[in-house]
Length: 293
Image 1 (spheres, one colour):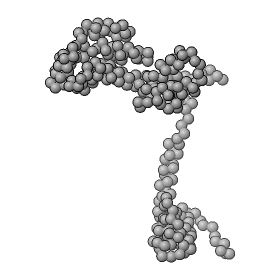
Image 2 (cartoon, helix red, strand yellow):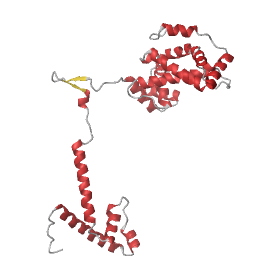
Image 3 (cartoon, rainbow, N blue to C red):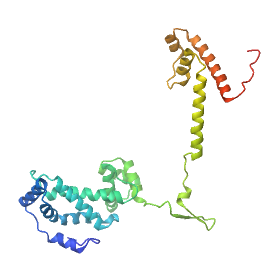
Image 4 (cartoon, rainbow, N blue to C red):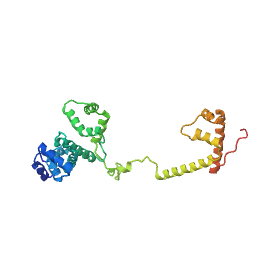
């Protein structure tokens, strides 16, 4: 096993010096740990497979993360495998542990490669860890492809949507940028931070408070104005004006035992009473009625 930069030589030497385990010995150690909590059995079982952890961690060294951290995450996966391994199944521990070690390292890479989580589903994870490889393979084939055709080929190979491939490609193509990064004004010598150019579409706090106060005031005015209506007028106004699903004149007429024209007349009269009540509550003088009406 080649030396992995960033990992202590002592750890690599200890991993290489650990003896290989026979199938039966491996099974006995797994049973001792799972059923009896034997820490020494766990140490022997995991120590014999640390070379596997280091080898798998080396496959992820190109993601810009510390090799020692990758090995540490792989060791966590190894411990998880030891806790879940079922010795009665006819499977070698190394075969079972490989999946847990790789999964633990992959999850660590996804969490730390960018401050924006780039792989939250199985599809996105497959894209994250295979997109570069497939893209390089297409390039090595000597066949020039348009970006769209290349994305289509990758999508077909991985069994995912082309839009997902294009989105992941854009994520991998750009690094994280700090909002506190300085931006130089071309017209002057002054500088500003990127954060200064972000536009917040939300209303200002004083506008929010003002809207809440006005909403409460309007609600109180409407409640006081509705008090001047009779029970039948109130029902018609609620059903016709204040309900999300408006009721037709004909339906209300059938329910109240009157014609739909009579419902319309009562509605108009009730709305007039409401306007006058609201004008009185707000202290607004209502315009004089025309003598011809």
